[in-house]
Amino acid sequence: MLTTLFRIIKYGFLGFWRNGWLSTATLSIIVLALLVFEGLMIFNVLTKNALETIQNKIDISVYFKTNIPEDDILKIKKSLEGLAEVKSVEYISRDKALEIFKERHKGEETIIQSLEELKDNPLLASLNIKAHNPKEYTIIADYLEKANFKVWFEKVTYTQNAMAIERLSRIIDTAEKGGLALIIFLTLIAVLVTFNTIRLAIYSTREEIGIMRLVGASNSFIRGPYVVEGIIYGLLAGILSVIIALPIIYFISPYVRIFIPEMNLWSYFTSNLAGILGYQLLFGVGLGVVSSVIAVRKYLRV
Amino acid sequence: MIIFQNVSKIYNGNGHQVVALEDVSFTINPKEFVSIVGKSGAGKSTIVKLLIGEEKPTKGRIIFSSYDVNKLKKSELPQLRRHIGVIFQDFRLLPNKTAFENVAFALEVAGRLQSDIEELVPQALEMVGLKDKMFNFPRELSGGEKQRVAIARAMINHPDLIVADEPTGNLDPINTLEIVRLLLKINELGTTVILATHNKEIVNYINRRVISLENGRIIRDEEKGKYILV
Image 1 (cartoon, each protein chain N blue to C red):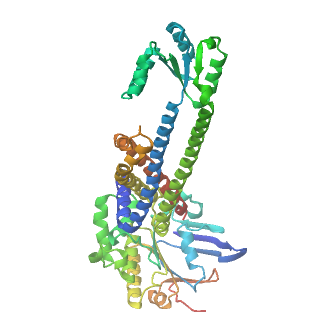
Image 2: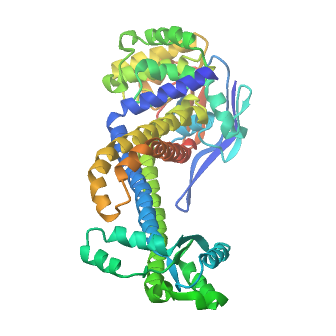
Image 3: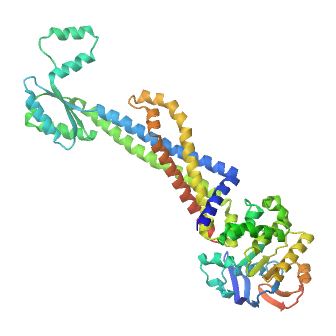
């Protein structure tokens, strides 16, 4: 049993080595397919990040009339937090609002001066409400509209931004769906290209398979080395695809930052290197083995 | 013991039927040397294919020692084939394996130990006169040398039977004679040999039992026969 396994592994390596050109051609196609897969993983992270950044910028702010005591506002905050749609509610007191305002306009003398001329703090206390899903802002806005404490509100920003929020939420929705379709489509192409390449490589050795059968080799003894070759293809292609991607990511990382300032692609890639390599190896080896098994099966019927 | 009992083989192709063998019966005893002769298309190769289970007969029964060949499952065929050494006109060597590895392969599929392989393969290659070309690939060998590697591979498992299907078809007269002598030597050592050929000279040179086929039927079966052209 162990000798057979050893022989199968030996012939797998020999086959890979002695069919040098064929192996190289097959390997480079699988590397390309894996690069597509890798690109999709990164694309997925990028869109997720970009969408999250946009989503985080959407919120509803409720401004309260100056005579409403803080305790009452905090009560409303609590009741809002009880809603399933609400992700977070942030309370900004009048003093805090002033602080933020001053911070934002630091160095703009005229604004600061005119502010100081006022006796009272002109800013209002507010609650910043964020939803789990951009679609849910209408529900929250509705809730605020019907609430009996509505009279305490000075203004609610949703009504002003409703159009923009709705449009953004539609864009986010489409981007997510389109991204998923693109990922499925390109993954399918990568799978088919890899499968076909391995199938062609095995097709070119179909006569050998027939000879092995005639000499009395069992199916598993014939199939084994091809499966080993599939594993070698997968391992090498996985490692190569990551090595090739490294300089590319390093080069495009600063450009990504222009579009999504929160995203450092290079550091994301390097800190998740083990995981990415793992996925690539899993995808490569899985695909290599499955393709080999399916492709050999056809020629084992002699 | 090999028995063909009323064996017929009909190929179905493009709506018309081709009769390759029709009601063929014969028995071959252990250690016999039998030539099966006939023109191309007479059914020689079909007999070989049926014997090693590459094809199934349309009718009839084929027995090889304890095997009921046409009743074997696909998974049982390798077992049968390890008892039969086959030699073909086109050599059928594995192109990416050396002469040594090609011969060793037949032992490896039978699960033999590495130490056996290292001992037996050089012996077999020496017997066919190729000890100095052990590590050459088939593309580095001449036709005659390739066929001798194939013979070494066929006999390495000490099979009960060696079937040679036109083994000299691609060889010059000198190499042809050498291959035939090798087959006779193997037969002398106690292995049954079936030689399918249309080469009149070698059949007459061998001077053993001859089964003559024509259009899928046996027209003559003689001990110490000659190849008589019809």
